[in-house]
Amino acid sequence: PLPGIERIGFRYGLVDYQHIELERGLPFTTFKNNVGEGRVEVDHHALENLSGTIGVQWINRDFSALGVETYVPETSQDSLGFYTTQAYTLDKFEFKLGLRTEQTWIDPSANTLKLRGSSLPATPLPDDLKFQAESLSFAIKWALLDQTNLTLTLNRGKRSPDIQELLSLGPHLSTRSFDIGNVQLKNETVNMVDLGFDWQAERLGFRANAYY
Image (cartoon, rainbow, N blue to C red; front, side, top):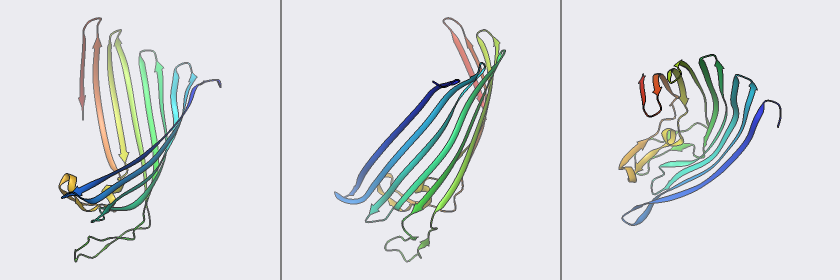
């Protein structure tokens, strides 16, 4: 092992999924979702009081929902993300920091979305869609006593729209809904503040959280 490096990990997974929705016993819509996802992580303990993880993650996905109604056209998605989590201890305090940045490219095979049998004009589609999302989290834990901790956590997370949220157009029989995507969607953002109190004894414990 390298100095300060505790672990180097690699994971890769494949998903080949398909299901067919039936209407009166006949095939109506075929959903296909083929995904490859990989991750490389490095765990370090660079300093006596500092440890953490640095990683990269990538996703390659092909998705479609085709049939009597083209619910979602054949679409490819590629994502590349970099992230890190770090922890630092100082006396009775522990500080934690998390960062993630991700770039996503979504490329539909169709040029337009058109509802079959409708007089509505076709909706033009861009050649591709690009999204960049950054997320940040910070936490501080204070050991008030040997068995009592007070924790404050701040989170700001972003999520890029999914293929179905962008490109759906048509009836979804299994949910009895008519879905309409929107290629103008932007990243979804979540902000959260969490204050926690934790007390643990040998046979009894108490935990309370307030969050916004």
